[in-house]
Length: 168
Image (tube, rainbow, N blue to C red):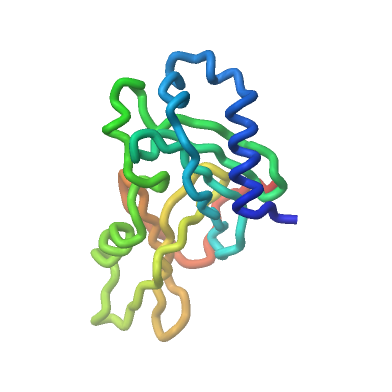
């Protein structure tokens, strides 16, 4: 059973409400937070794996709750180091949007060699939490490379080559 987006939202809300993080000064801004739309995170083979529920403060993605497909909360985290600097948080829990991921990946795609990039898919590359946008490079209709785009950097490897993964 894979929990629905609505269930992930409810689970995240309950976890934040009962979590001791509310006592931590780092999480003080969360008293004004709301939860955003859960985003499904897939594995590199594009199968649903878990949800990331954004914690939104003043229109910024200030944190997240990672809810596994089973409904277990795997992590709660802040996307800032200083609770007085929420405005520096990203607009989206993924750090960049799919259009930006596509733009960055295109720099590595060579149409002259018959390469075509897929639409970005938000995945975890290896264990949950190692998240990136995946752009699959197709050559003659077959996947040849995977390009992973994060807010900080871009990397790639042969399509189908997986890292060690942990599954729930």
